Image (cartoon, rainbow, N blue to C red; front, side):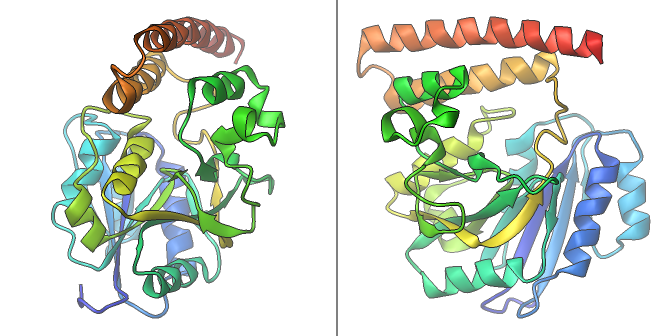
Amino acid sequence: MAGGPRDLEIVVVSYRCRELVEACLESLERHPLRRGATTVHLVDNASRDGTVAAVRRRFPAVQVTALATNAGFSVANNLVLRGARAPYVLLLNPDTEATAGALDHMVDLMERRPDVGMAGCRLVQPDGAFDHAAKRSFPTPLSALAHFSGVGRRSDSRALGGYRAPQLGERDRGEVDAVNGAFMLVRREALAAVGLLDEAYWLYMEDLDWCYRFHERGWKVLYDGGATFVHAKGGTSGKARAARQNIAFHRGMGRYYRKHHGGERPLTEAAVYAGIGVKLGLSLTRSAIARRLA
């Protein structure tokens, strides 16, 4: 790592998604950061599918850490974040692919906006459809209910569709509550002030929690629709989540609410936890049916 002002470290965490990892790393080779040095790290969560050997063979410049167990998203990323030395660090999902100029565009943005601690870019699915989770508002009980019931996904109302931050267009640039964990570009100075990812989240909701903490410490979170990464949404978890993933997702929802809003309104809190429990039951049932039909 040269230590220059535009240098970048990229962290990719993998679990049983060798083909996606290879496609992601190939895209970073095709569309690298042009005006700065880049170090790419791969942390593998005990995939045992040949990912580690394949990456070491095909991408010798990538710094690989092979874990003995599936430690989860936060723990794996934090292994690299603790030792990061570049001014900027990008947390990147293995089911993403870079497009031309996207990395330079986003680093340029951070250079121009020293008040921004974290930034996310436009995410599109392989068919070109916009991934609305690229920009989000912090959930309220109403917006979360609307989102998971499907009503909020079709509404531009801030009350019902607020989870998707509809006030900001797909190709716009502006401040948001949160960006997606698939692409989180972080200023190391802000990381030092905010701290690492909360390792009590094994998988899911850690990105929303981190964004909340960036705001608490006075750092802005920005979405920029002028740069694009492709995101094969669900590529690493599959279309039907395994039971452990489902439980982790809903446990993360409960932890996020308890951590940031617990004790504010006891009746609302009880209703939120009950709703999470009901949703978990429905999600486990749907996933089990989907796996049987697959």
